[in-house]
Length: 166
Image: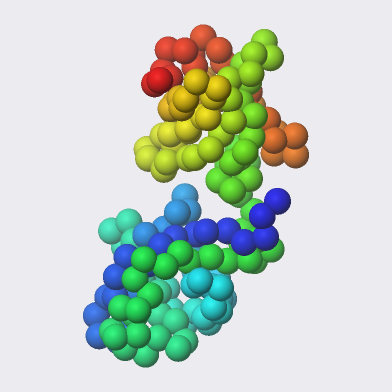
């Protein structure tokens, strides 16, 4: 398991007091309110304030006093130590835990290895296969089960073939 989780990316400075506008990679922007500290390129910052709105998170961090300092952080990934992140809800998983999982049908047919998850209304999974890439939505009825410890995702073969994009 990975030791740090990428929870967002700095989009731009917000205002003149060093606040950062962050695109969250979490199911809920409110989870940022639980973080006491975050890391940007490995450098630790204490979280002073958090607010959410319009699908973004606005962070004020100690050591980022003004717009010029915030501008230097544009494009940086926001990470947190895994042990400080909340446990995912039942049926939800951290993307970092899914990547590298073998994807098979319920009959045991090996389809490929999960290499990417694109967040959308329904997450889009990318599989690496022997012949290229396959994209499919992680919609209800497609993903049957997920076993993080075994790094294995079981899909309904029929539904998978209906929705997969080669």
